[in-house]
Image (cartoon, rainbow over all chains, first blue to last red; front, side):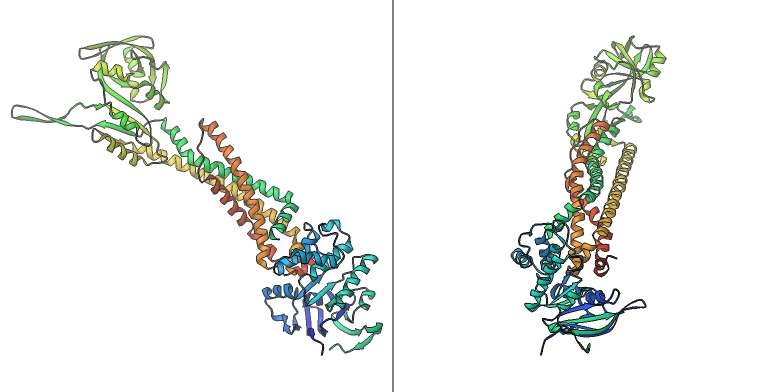
Length: 232
Length: 382
């Protein structure tokens, strides 16, 4: 039986009267690539933030590695983010005054201790071996996103969460980033990727479709065939 | 890594931080200037105040003589007493004694009128009594005298005249070099050199009293007086002029209070500038703070970063301000007191620590604001 790494049970998030997430149930197995799609305001980013320990659900349970993270204190959530998740952002969010190498080492520093060789290897793995000492402003959008991916991977997180990772990239850079994601998936990493891009969504094992905070359906993408299956 | 983040961040925000550092430099310069001056200002102000009069007087011990005739006793009368001039050398060695003037008072006959002849060391009297107004010149030799304004009026004498003074069988003709006006007892006296008065009255090596100007910025007046009593070992009586000492103390305390208030106000302004600058920096770096938190940065690391940035401003301001303050203190001391100052030993650590403390205190609100940054909202661009 596949190891379940994420289990969401009746997960809801209210902002005042607005139901950003409404009783969402799903499971993610270890090594799976899940894409989350839906129109703007459907709750995709809210779901990703809750999965990443950046936000809390109003009700429901969220088990990551079997531990319910909904009851964690702010300090425990910080620890959870540090140890368990790697975040890839659409806007990259690199520290402007640190080099590519230092931006990767920043995640190491907050996790435990820095290891320059490891950070260098992570950047080489995403094809940035020649751009280690460049500042973000000296890198293209695609290169910045690759630094962001290297930073997300550096602490070997159990779960990689990406919010529109190709949203700000041109076609060539999108291709490079998707290839990296493909490699990560092949290596057994668990990926949850929020996307608007149908091409990105098709590369995932399964596709979660949200609308108005409701989980509309989960589609199986294997062999380029869409199989609807129960959400939970 | 922390130092790399810190240095990168300082470099990145250098223009803004420079404004905060400048405010701290100005504040610290004033603190440094005041610290260095206040150590010395008591002395400076004290020395200035001392030019307006003495605060200790040494008199001969009054001994009484029983007088009578046959078996009849008429009672005690005070015997005319003087002090030996040698005690002056002992007095000068006492710590805190800035200057002294010895006097020999005698009543002489001046042109048929009785007048008080005051023998005094002219140069000392000139130094210690700067407010004395002399029309003409101070005596330059033993045969020259100053005459008080009232004496001049009574005798009809004026500058350039010669005046014959008689004491018992001794007679001396002395030249009036100037007319003295003090508004005090000196207006009714004839001022001659101590040596001239001693010779005329036949009391060589004797004085009637010594007026001492003691600096009380480092030692209390009572301690100096006690020291003097020990030195002269009962040859005379030491009295303190407490009213003047009290006034001097009040002036010094007010000067210190004023300087303290100015320093506090300037530092408060510096603190507000630092707080304002750091607040702006926190707002500008909300995304970066949100990212750090999203990556799992603990609050203490985020707080540490901003506290160290504030500490850097404080240190830079403190060290630079100290140097500027020393220059300021020297300039003020030279301009106002016409004297050099001695640097306060605690000036550098004091200024730096105060600047550091003020900068850290000023960073409290910005740090709290940084810790309150919600990564979800900031990374969403809210």
